Image (cartoon, rainbow, N blue to C red; front, side, top):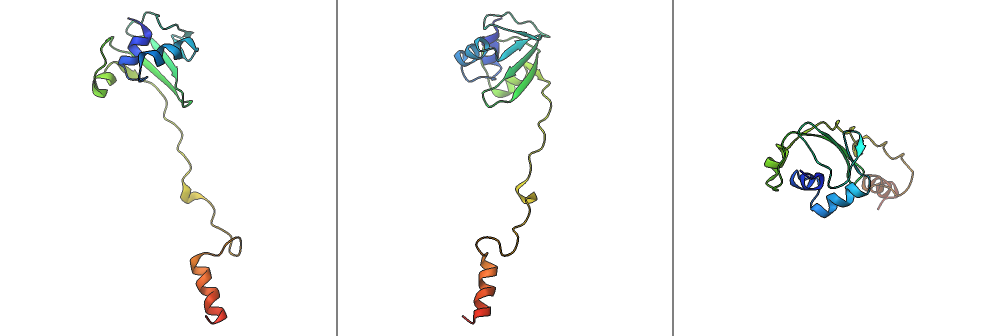
Length: 118
């Protein structure tokens, strides 16, 4: 089965032409070798894909199917070996604003108003 057709059926890419363009652009490797869209896939092959967002996915071909089905059916076509992404920093972990730096907060403004007698 063709690589671009399998990538489309496995829902890695939205369209088959996007899958073919990724293969032509060197963004898809099969068994550590760069692959063209017409590369024949077999169960057990290791596919490494660099997605447009910059993420990399590592997929092991489990089943070959040329029809695009639901997401549940697509997940059955491969085993996802992609390592988990590192956790993102949380916004709550940012250091607090130093008092007196920048525009006063609502609480600080009310304290200033009380001090001035307003």
